Amino acid sequence: MSPKPTRKSPLPPWLPPLKTHLSTPNTSLTSFTLSTSTPAGPRSRTVEFRGFLPTLNLHASAIASLKDQGIGLNPDVYESEMLVVTTDARMEKAKELEGGGGKVEGVFWGREAFVLGAGEDGDRGEERARGAVGRGLLRKGSGDGDGEWTWERQVTMYFANHSPVMRGSFKNPPPGTPRSQAPSNPELKLGQKVEDLRDKVARENFRVVVIRPEEVERLDLKDLANVTRTRWTFVPEADGDTWEGKWEEVDLWP
View 1 (cartoon, one colour):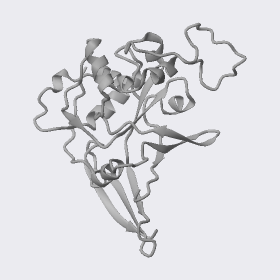
View 2: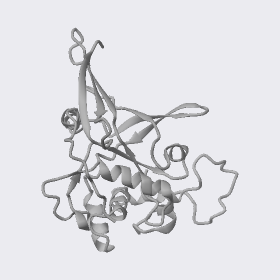
View 3: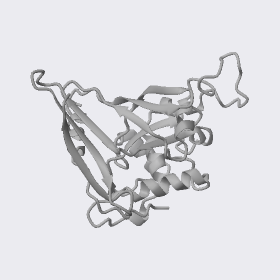
View 4: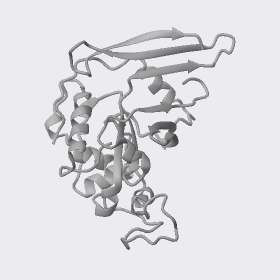
């Protein structure tokens, strides 16, 4: 099933400079700190940045596996500012974010500047998440080929872009459980390599987390005599679609 984007608002003004910094040669910005809020208190984790939905920089081996296993690639017809990470459905952060609506904060540290996957038969939370995320996609050009685009293939493309060993990590014993506690499923063990992109056990645990920015700050420390700090806040149109609106830019004291 393909998304039904209705969005007309353009991509935000902070996206080009962020992409520039993320693509700088020798950059180490492949991970960032993701913070969530729980009843027990705040939690912060370092997560791997997987790009902006739905654009992927696919490895050659991932492309080969997708084609060899008859899955193929989604047409390049959408773009957005939504950040993507992947996670194991059994981890706490997945439970905190399940079904959409979870408030998070992400921080990139640079030297020079600043949940999907349950399948067609997924629960209502999955359907709501797909609907909300899909409305936020922006068609590229005329959007020719969007009828061939599917959520299932997109999630599989993210899965394929992991190495076989990383795919195998989704068949590990449940994260955070005692080693003295043997998994009830004998297929759950360390050190596995997964070549099959439809591996039932691994795919049941694999999730794609999509983060929709509503406020973005940039702190520039290049010139310590004149440090600059800028905040962009999304202001939705009154009584309109939550994806329609504008980004307000404010210069702040650092």
